[in-house]
Length: 130
Image 1 (cartoon, rainbow, N blue to C red):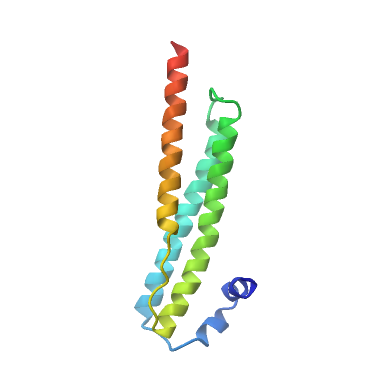
Image 2: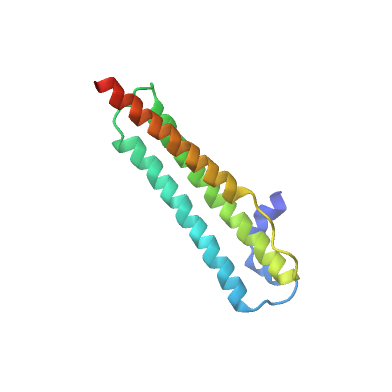
């Protein structure tokens, strides 16, 4: 695992693997990486916004739980993005199948579950005001 992390910071090592691919494939891989980074940044921004701007919710510390969950999810997405980029670039250079990933499905489920929990919190607060 440590070697994989070290490869992220050594662009010369990546160039020694396999053969030089068509630049379009490498650039497409980079665009995908940047899209994942934007997703991570959006989740982090959402976490900061939740911490700063959400009013106290009916469940004790729910606001903080939401904020921390979004911040951790955003950081995880960013780290996962660089790992997927490196593994994909390596596969492209070696002419192998692209690495499969369950992460998009896990992320979608986490965001969907988070949205459902927020809807429940909003409804509980709305009913509590009556």
